[in-house]
Length: 374
Figure 1: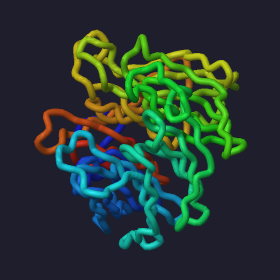
Figure 2: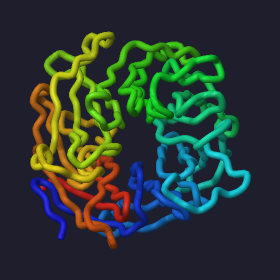
Figure 3: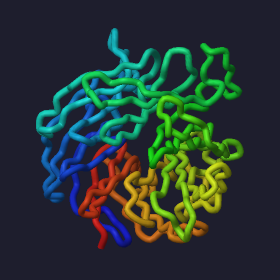
Figure 4: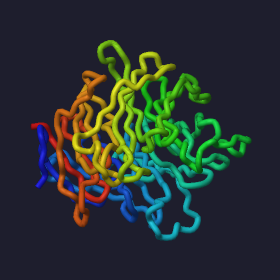
């Protein structure tokens, strides 16, 4: 049975495993980890009785595990799935799919945008007009950052791009890292800045006052000595005690059982040209114990509503972290769903919150938990 402290289950939707979930106007958009499942559109206005409205499929060997919505549009990614051993369909290209969701029961494909080469698009942000994404492109090693304008969603137009020096091999650059270790995971916009996670390259703060020419402001890379890659650089939209902060989540992958498990960082960016880590947080019971990957930190809720940040903490379920004292983050509530059918443990992958204060926690193996405060 699910358990928790300060949180309890308000509803549950049995579905294939998901990589991301977003909720708008009582409708949940669930992006699935593995084909043939692509995207599910689910009515969650009654959290005790979620109802499937529509589905999109993906061909085997690929997946569409990320989704964003805004301004009547739904954006889904198209990417090769490295853990799917099925052959890739002939002629298939990665990128993004752009859908009209003015009628959520009938998502209508407007167009697809395809990358020039490689894996496709991983994760991204979308503000209703611009997509800030991480495509693979011909001539570059690993995913880069690209801004796409959807003013006319039938004709997606690239506005600008940025890459970590060393990625543009076609331009004569040479990476100083192994293979695609430094690659864009996803940017998050706040104002005229993009806070961009860059995997084993840490994070970069980019100035997009001129979107056609993104400029590097600063960044941090703590790998090494820490072995887990940087997954999310989440700007806190309000000041805390007169200072500005960036919450950074590393992803608990790419390590051995005795390596330090991934955790959360608080970084002071009051002087954005000199970001300074001021604290970290790890769920109790992980430090000092051997653990397999995907035990610890993964993804915060990117919709920030205050100083309490909901987190998907892989095998530790949902955690709410209070950052009101940025130098000493503390856990104030937790929720542990049951493992998905056939799974030995929980694998909480992504989380969001709706306007009613309900939390939506997707498991990468299966199931959407709808959670409320007690």
